[in-house]
Amino acid sequence: MNEPAIFVLIRDGERRYYLDSRAGAFLFREILWGPDALEEWVTQFDETGVWTDEVAAGVVVDFDNRTIVWAGDDEELDVLRVRRLYEQLLKSSWPNFTVSQALTGMRELAKAAGESDWDTYDEELESRYESFRSAAGLDWSEDDYDDYADSDADEDDADEDEEEQYDGDEADFDEDDEYGGFGDEPRAWVTIIEEGGAVRHRQLMSFSDDIINADPGILEELMALDAAEIPAESLVAEGIWFDHAKREIGFWGSRLAMYDLPRLTRAWHDWTVAWADGGYTEQCQAAGPAGTIMSDSQALGTILPIILSTKRFDIDGVLDDAGKQLKVMAIKAMGCLVAIIWLPILLFAVITQYWTGSLIAMGVVVVAAVIVFKVVEHRVKQPFQELDSPDRADDDRPPVAGPVDETARRQQLDEMLVAAGLPSFAEVELHFPMKERFDLFDDD
View 1 (cartoon, rainbow, N blue to C red):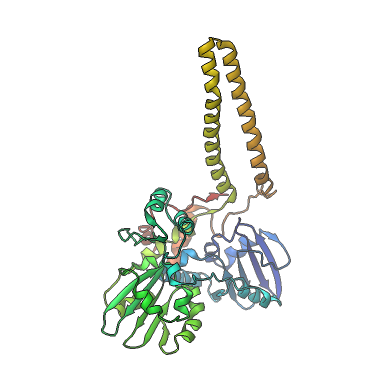
View 2: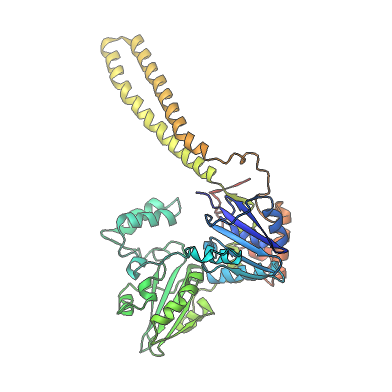
């Protein structure tokens, strides 16, 4: 349940391996502070001496050849403009280094580390939906949709969303919802330009295999979906447009889209397929009407709060919060049980007027309930306590790479932005979200 990451530092031909159980959660933040800060932070971890692929993320820094390759969760970089600005900032903070993200995850990272058996590892790219119907939520079961709603809805409106979004055998996305039923999660944008010039838009949670593989009749089936508006750039992770008159396809998106481009090109062989380097803006141009384009400051405002933060993923905090909620529920349940047991005793006391014995019996019930509750609580807690790392309490290492002091961290981040030719920290800070997203993180 942690987010382990491996770090490989190569210097003078020697490889040194370091492992940390939680560094993978926001690896993109840690590598941003440059080679010196990363090396200083990494060398405080446990040195393992060997490679392992039982990790969620990793970095290989080759100081001899001046290269850095990283792999990890990049969900915060789903929006293409955000990703490109981040990459611009990253390259600026690693001067004279060739910086790249492993397209196939740990498979490519192992190769960069010089592991001879790298080709035996499975590629770690996420799989796509099999059909566009699944990507639109049309073929989901009630349980499938509940899982999606639980994972993406805010705590304040999760229950409301689950009740109103699902209807019968098909998930019926509410067209009156602010984002067409997708919440605030980046999605896939499909544009179909018909022979006569009419432009149709559709939205999916992501592109599906039947679209990438050009299944027969797929464009007609997509056209049968409910019409959609042009989504804002901040809500698009990948896009595609089909121009019937020109027989052209424009395609763009995340590293998963880049990986699927050759497959798309082969499948749609009677169309001209091109990678749309302009992304959202280029699709808007192809579609005609303008969309809602993010400014650089707005885009950076989505990730700078995380980069500025010195908080780390803490599974103990997650379990502690869940445990507190469970404990409250258990106390309420135990209270109800005690009340049920008390009822006949009170009835007996009222009828017989034997209050002394009845009150004693009620007290015995309370004591027994407390003892049972404490015993059960101890047995539930014990397995989780055994999962704690023995050195966690004494871990006084810096929680993140780069400055830990907030003022120094802000100042250095501002200098990094200016050096990369990006808006200043003061300009970006105006676009920070009001609600922080660190409920699962804590200061070390």
